[in-house]
Every structure is written in structure tokens, then in C-alpha cells.
Length: 416
Ligand code: ATP
Ligand code: MG
Image (tube, rainbow, N blue to C red; front, top):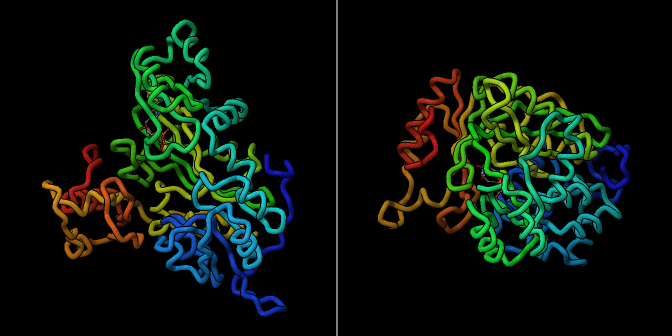
């Protein structure tokens, strides 16, 4: 469901090329966070110039880009400058105003497009989409209902008591577990909806999860699609803590179904770019459990950061290639990997005092790849970087991951 509903031809933006006016091939990104920074690194490695549109002067991506347009995402002059500088534009966060993407798309290829980003921005539309392609993808979302009015809230008590205990989630602007309240009773639900300001929400049934996983898909302008194997994710307090990326990370049958479902969801959207689809594994179905689709991110994803160090083509390389109309080769993972997220918590001791993590010891461990995003102040819960551990076999990767997690005081590794 791209803007034209059809896959379109795209004249490739060739790496390192210079046009007749002497302008270098430049790729643009809306948003200046860590995902934008890693996109910029990937684009620059291929010889592209980069432009970042981001209001924050100190942003991780703005600091490493050739151009940093420091305006609001909706600023007409900023958007015009981005379009003038760039041959193609992408986004690094889903809450970018869809209007900004629409404006850019008038003059430049924009991947992903405003329509699909708009769907991913809104849990109600997202679930409608997942449901619409469930027959093809083979995967449904958790049982849910929409709550936008007091009448819909009331109706839960009478008609949808099966959804309790559940999770009330705002339709828009949720991430890292924000905008979510867990509720057990109709009274708690009413209080939670009031707490969320009566915003448009979905109430989702609380499912007995046995695992969570996600799949990264890259799809080109011509409809060509490639995918990475599913990675298993461990969340702590609603934030991704650990990603396990190796063959034995989940039952093969479930991994195959998740991968196929993510690809069909991308096709059904007419998606161009990198898409991450998150799944739950729940008890029941087969002996290994069954899959439920949770949500999607219209961009590279935290759970795909291991691809930088463990695959021959990373999720950010794929983002660059897809938007620029370059070939999308099947990615190959050459090493098993575990990724540990580094939140600002790592910079504080148990008394709340500031400390410098013991990087020298961590980096002396074999196969450790440290990525820090260049954020100046560490705050609890803030994503500051990640550490990927690669090795020749899963057992040694797990051993090093445990040691690194111990040194840094990281949670989420109890089950390995
Ligand atoms: P993200 O940072 O991935 O954008 P988010 O804030 O958008 O997160 P979700 O992915 O919907 O929120 O939920 C966060 C986490 O809460 C999930 O990864 C899962 O651990 C748990 N969770 C969410 N919905 C359910 C559910 N219906 N049943 C059980 N657990 C759930
Ligand atoms: Mg999520």
C-alpha cells in the first residue's frame, strides 16, 4: 500500500557519483538519533554524502553527517533544503510527521513512504493491517479492542471481559513500554484510560509469552525482498535488554513462520526500505507454542544492531541500498552473536553515584564490539550504546556475554 499502490521503477543513486552541477550523491535522513547515526555511517562507507534533518544541535547523527539541517521536522525551509541536497530520503524514527514525508515525496524518492509510516505510527491502523493480511501471513495479533470513547470503555465490561487482564496502550507515540498500563479489572482499566488522558487506545489481552522475536526485512522499489533470520529478544522493564542471534535461538518451525510472515506483511504494505516486525511466542498451538504479531517499526531496529558485526550486510547497509535503488543481496550471518543494550544505568553505581564503565576489561574479552552513540549525558533508561559479542560458536559467545554483562551490571541474561 505505497502511495501509488504499485512498485515503481527507481533510477539508482550510484555510490560516490557526482552530477553535472558537481553535486555529490547525497542521502538524507529525517531524525538524528542513534539509528540515524548508524545509517549515516553505512551511507558514508559507500561514498555517499549524508544530510540529517534534526532540531537538536548535539544529536548523534547530526554530529557525524556532512550536512546537519537544524530545523523542526515540519519546517518548510528545512524540508526544502533536505530535498535540494539529497537524491533520496529515509527516516530513522516512526514518529516523524507523515506530512513531512509527503512533502519530500513530491520531489524526491522517500523510503519508506508516508502512508506506511502512518500505519506504523498508529497501533489501531497497524493491527487493522495485520488482521487484513493474516490469511496470507498466517499470523494474527493479540485479541484486542479499540477504546476511543467512554462508550467503548463501558462495553469492555459487558462484551470483552475476555481481554482482562490486559494492557492498555496508546494508539500513538508509544515506545519502550511508554504509554502502556497493565490492567486487571474494569475499574483499573477506567483509571488507566483516565491516566492516559482519554487518548485513543487499544486494550490488548495479556498473553502468556514464552519468548519474543523480531524479523528484519528489506524491500526494494522493484518489490525484491530479503530478510534476516529472526532474532530472539529479552525485554527488561519494557525496554530491549538482550538480543540472541544464532541458529538455535528458537525452534526452527517458529523461526520459519516468523520470517515468512514478516515478508508477507512487507509485501502487503508495498513497503520500501527496512521493516522490523516484532512477534510474541505464546503457549499453545504446537509443543513449541505459536506466533502472534505484536507491532512493526518502519526502519532498522535496536534488535537488528547485531547485523553490524555478525552479518556481511547490516540492517543499515540494507536501508541505504533499498532507498538508493541498489541491489539487495541475501544477507549472510557469519558469526553467532548476542547484543547487550547499554542504557544510561550502566554509568551509575548502586548508590546512584556516577561511574565510568570498565571498558578496558570489557574490550579485553574476545569478540566484543562496542558501539557508543555519542550522547553526552547518561540518564537511567536512555539508550547510550550497545555491545555485540561475536565468536566462532554459540557457547563461547554466551560465555563472553555473561562476563561482559557481569562487568557492566547488565540484566536479562539469566536464561542463558
Ligand atoms: P517498543 O520499544 O518495541 O516500541 P512499545 O512500547 O511499542 O515497545 P510493545 O512492543 O507493544 O511496546 O510492548 C512492550 C513489551 O511489553 C513487549 O515487548 C512485551 O514484553 C510486553 N507486552 C506487550 N504487549 C503484551 C501482551 N499483549 N501480552 C504480554 N506481554 C506484552
Ligand atoms: Mg515493541
